[in-house]
Length: 347
Image (tube, rainbow, N blue to C red):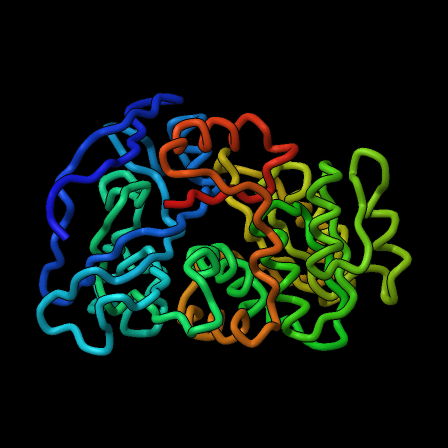
């Protein structure tokens, strides 16, 4: 496909505008993809609202959007295994493939990774077309659509946390924060055979959704204490605790919720880089802490789990916006966190 396309670009804090760009053509090893669905992520909203995320700072125009599903429209030289018209999910970060991290299988930790919608790495895909390295594109089976393809991105974050901590059948888990990543963590735990999953949040709408996707019981932290409840569990706490809010209060709570020899997994990304942990309690419990950075080697497994019916991925979507309303969609998602659980842009 040639010609020009519309792109939604963040030009400064809370400043989005439309621009026209040439449709990118696939280089050797790349696919050109017409986007059909792109999820709106919490990190997109951090960049929009605060002009920064963790250690990245907005210092020039940046297209947001890194949860893409679409259809192949052109194939670069040397690419095999894809045809024009294939439905694909895009894993948004392309590693170098040569460094020590890549060679040991930890490609998500590649220092030269190029991630969509990150300053000085790559523009995001709130655009009509994109090109992407074919090695990071995955064909979707007949029974999956490109909306699910885009949602694989947050799903694999949740899956990665449950893989690192090796959550197992018969364990108890507590999930703090029931936004998109918290919900993906709940679904991943359930798919791994964890049947006792307790979830906490401050927004009732998110807690309803947590029950819908597999939580056993939910707690609104403004009204109930999950710390008090955890003490009533066998062993005085949970086997697994997942912090999915990226929040000072919940991060401090984690060590008080595990049983002896329990595990804490820090999945949430906090806008502030330094948070406290209750180290004395962690030591007394001989707890283990895992930290999560995106995901690795999980897209094929996630596709199998969704297409096989183990994970009801579409249930997390609360709002679908048309691409022409992209600016409104980002503003609305940012300003109505109490009702937008997961927003998706439809092309």
